[in-house]
Image (tube, rainbow, N blue to C red; front, side, top):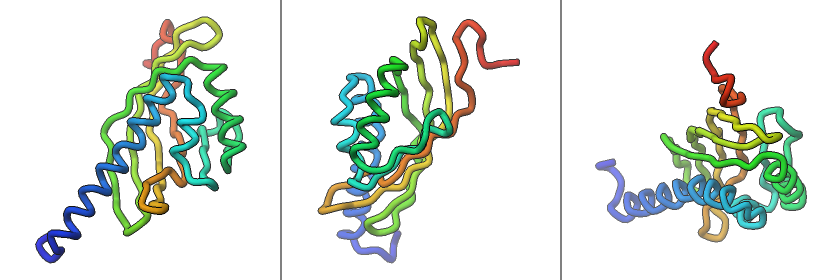
Length: 147
């Protein structure tokens, strides 16, 4: 970083913090069941891949429908952590890890995995360009995840 100007270093810190805020707000809005707020975190052509749990949703209308359906079927309580970000100007990629508690069909469910994210800075605001969820396990709590 020594070869970068102070202004560049500060801008990169601001960008990283804004990107870190995206998954935190995402989880908060999911907890609140605020689908429009979740979708507002995506670019207009943004996409979400639930890792095969449902078809990839692309664009605002498809994202709204997918999150409405997904949050109705699963009362998720996501916990996000270990966020790694690679900045590339007005684009970035990242990985963050997820622990999930949920209720599905009247039973407690536990899950873990990670998101592969692509971020885009549009009009000075960072958004998700895409999110792909990669599940490690998604099981009823009574069954546990160990075999």
